[in-house]
Amino acid sequence: MQTLSEKNKAVVKRFNEEFLVKGNLQAFEEIVAPDFVNHTAPEGSKDRNATRDFILKLLHPAMPDLQLEIFDMIAEDDKVVTHKAFTGTFSAPFMGQAPTGRKATLRIIDIIRLKDEQYVAHWSIREMITV
Image (cartoon, rainbow, N blue to C red; front, top):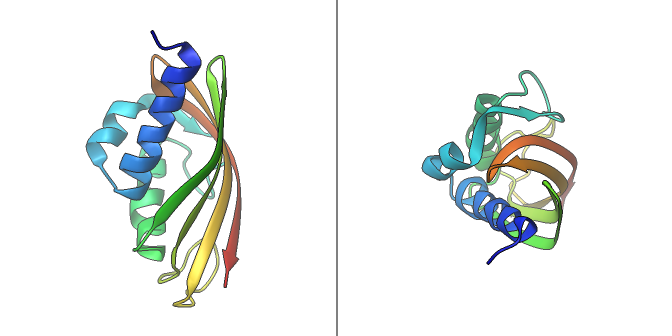
């Protein structure tokens, strides 16, 4: 039987692989709670729809060949922390930077709070590195 921490880590891994990388909207709908709040949203609304749109309309066009590497994932109680990096060809404007057409890395530390195997809150630190 899985512990709460193991279950939460599996949910976060699925969200990262299925939605963040592949854009699977069904995974998004199943994982992100209706009252979800993104406390460190880059601009505008902090709700689930703004988070969905940020990934699909900004991140994916900026890095159409998006790849993910999760370096660390730590879970305790209702929170999961990931240290990860997205890499891809920087092809469209993103987070105030002009595209370069070259490889770029977006390093992130995320803190996710979950309830009943759904995302209810998010905080992050992001660093965009272009090569």
